[in-house]
Length: 470
Image (cartoon, rainbow, N blue to C red; front, side):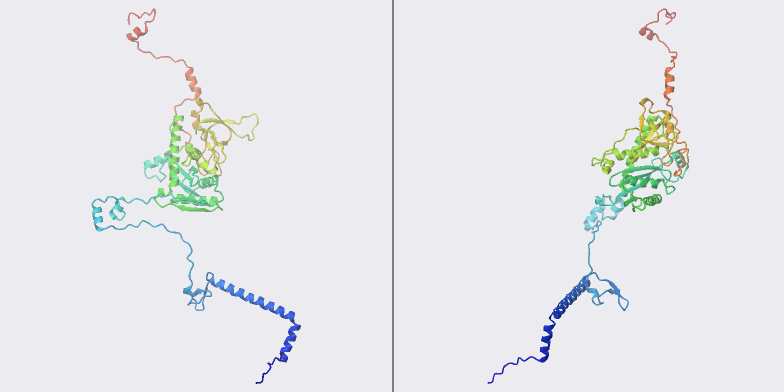
């Protein structure tokens, strides 16, 4: 058997390729690197397409006009699953369940105790749903609660002669505000109820700035009364560009806004107390609508913020600022002397005048003093002795109200007129000068009867001609 040697001959074309490869070795290496980079780029494109297919599908419109997911055919649309996400659990209302027939018949004999599945129990003894305190987060939006109260009147339009007489005697509308977190309170007598004028809205915006809510979003909660809603809208306008979120309590449910109801209760109680004390000091009856109530209301809120201690052992002022209040102790309505600023006055003239104490401005700590000419702010005062501190002339010293501090002048920002006869109270207390004149006079005793028993007890007068007649 003949063994044939394998044919290892190389074709001319192969020889040519080998020769060319040897000559162009560097060129082939570059082409290999280029092909590897193209492979990597294609792999990255595939990965990118896979990631885009796993993202939330975008919606487009097919040729037939029906909306489908972009990149997904109509058959595959049902296979795309939506991300369920998170949700809050809604609190379930009480679901009454009927008992057995025998238990129903036994209950219908007495209807005791109350059962929520019994229609007659609900109709006869059903009460309003309870009010529970909600827990607030530390980063929650601050809440300011507002409402009107009427210490001296009903706050409604008079319908008969009696109500007209009561309104003529002087009704008073008070705007009460309280911060939910710090319990800081403000009470301001307003000249009228509603949107006429800007005093109520400006006073509320100033209170928000006083408690540190200027320029930040807040929630203002009130009832659904038209006048109250209008005031809240004005407050939002004065606070702009800061955000003001409005919340309203249900109609006829004052307990739903318990924060402001508790503030009104505290304010009215302290107002009655201070009114009784001032009437005793002045020895007079203060009529409803007197200008002193406008300043007394502001002062009541000032005292509640700084001296009423809550269950946590702190006052509202301490809870807000972290320090105790340091103010001079005075009684509202008492006579004093105060120092005015020297403006275009010669140095030989005195800057001290008589006035009465009307309160303290919360933000600056300035003392508010009333005179016959108006109301002033000062830093320096001097108390009078107790004997002359409560003179009758103090009654004539309330010369203005918060919305018109000057009784005679026309103020551009005045939001209402001065109440009529605001400083007229009839009293029987004498001035100190009159008291001294009466005491200096010689008292002449009146005639009186002397009995025989008195003579035997105290003795007879010597050399009396009528001794024998006695």
